[in-house]
Image (spheres, one colour):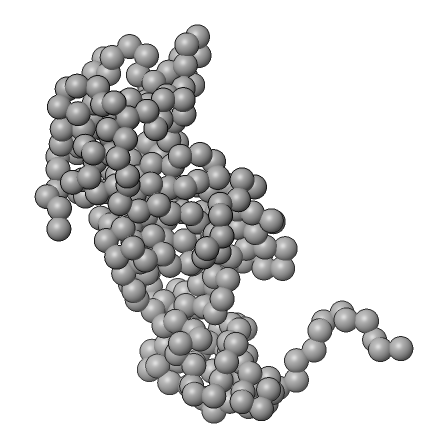
Length: 272
């Protein structure tokens, strides 16, 4: 899609000019993180240099992207975080010279923002790392909730992988023995084999997605627990509105017949 440029982090002592905290290069573009005057360890601004000439864009003239691992493995993509509340700018190698001059990114990503809603200044976002040549993992925090997402720059697809809030304190549940892991985002859950986890976190698929995999007539699946090394106990709702329990085998992709169960609120006050 894009030629893979040569990516080199200038890590040799004395390679960066004075006042430069960090620098990175891809092809003809060099990015510099500049130290604040009188505060040599604090970043105050960023500069882009294209072909040895300082670029005219001023997007980061008074701020710094905290993403220092700016280039994806192989150098196909660059990633910038504009502020603690976002957004992320995703820029292809081919677009990087134009972006350095103030041009638009290939994609603008706001973690955990509902579709169509403006960004919330109360939201805090963070870069968690590259997950392959085309994907990175990010985190969004707001209203007491923490969500993790993987964004695949090649496909433009974001995959939610985890939600933690006041009710849910855990979102990854390995099976006994670790052959599979259940990941629980805001809606539904994923059952992913151990060997498929890197692909899942890179946003390229892998695993079984619920509710999509439910048998016909069942909705609102909730992961309950592992029953042994390869049996996922699920609660769902049938067409009559009754709570049912069924067991899914990720090894065979099959389900047991659903059986009606009673669901109660633990600790709910007794009726007068």
